[in-house]
Length: 104
Length: 373
Image (cartoon, rainbow over all chains, first blue to last red):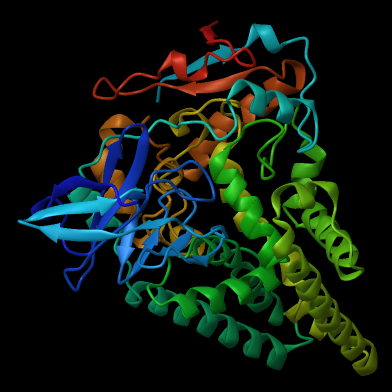
């Protein structure tokens, strides 16, 4: 069952960047690609307890700021060591300049 | 530079256990010292994004100079061999092979040197071979080094343990200890086995790669040795493998300064890492890793942007040592003092503009807040 949450405004996220979004003890990362599309994943790297929001977005890759582990933020697939475990992704929709994510 | 001397009285009676599978490591996990939250200087996201941006230009230029110079020195040395005129050329080749390789291995291991992924990977593989570090093992080892920098029993890359083994340090100026261990590790891995420590920090799915690469390397070194025997000349060994010994001195000289004589078991890189200003030649060989506090605090920033990062956050860091010589003047007396009093370390003074060291970050049962002597 869907549980759509209002995460942020569209303008809160720069193109080819991400922000951190915390909700009820959980932390997420909201991405805006260079194609102006929005995505959402878990906010912590699967390698160690590090917030991805401090990392670097390059094309469709998010690189962890601590150990440079890489993920494709569209699918969550791990793309470079030390990241080996897939990142959980969440559905996203944009309504009235707000970014909503389904955290169910 | 003002240097304050500190000791940790509560630890005086306890022998340090640097083994990754030992008691100190377990204690660090239990007390939250492992995988802890570390201090970071505040940097606006916009500025940090600009600093983290990747590019190929600087690394392509530097790699062309590095490999091109190696080719020129090696060709000249071979042509002049066995004349004594070959010696300075071999010495220059050796530094590029046995020292500049260390920083190329490091930067490309982080994946920050080049923007293009395959370029990072290619240089990483070449550099790993030359510096004799299994590229899989050491990628994971270095990840742990960044997670648990100089945390006893957790960090596999503590180069100077307390009390310092000065004989080992001197031998390593010529790479002797490192190469000895590298050969043993390579032979063990090629034989299909990993040590307990390797199994501790390398995920199971990565372990077969360690063995495969070790076998390829053994084949290359065997071919080099066979060529030397067949031709009755040591030239092949002076070109492959040997420079890891006779050219290691520069990376040892700069590498010891990274953390030598500073604090253990703290979660603030300003306390356990050292930034040293260096001449341009050493900075080229070292690829700006002299900005070591900055690198540890923000490992995503490429080597070529570290001087800009240094300028941006310098107000929050201890003043850098102004030269390699000054760094050694600070570090060597600390090593000598640690021979008699192994809990001694250097605590470097912060400028008035810096946020103070946070005692609560370090006040774990394993490491009570230090007090000035």
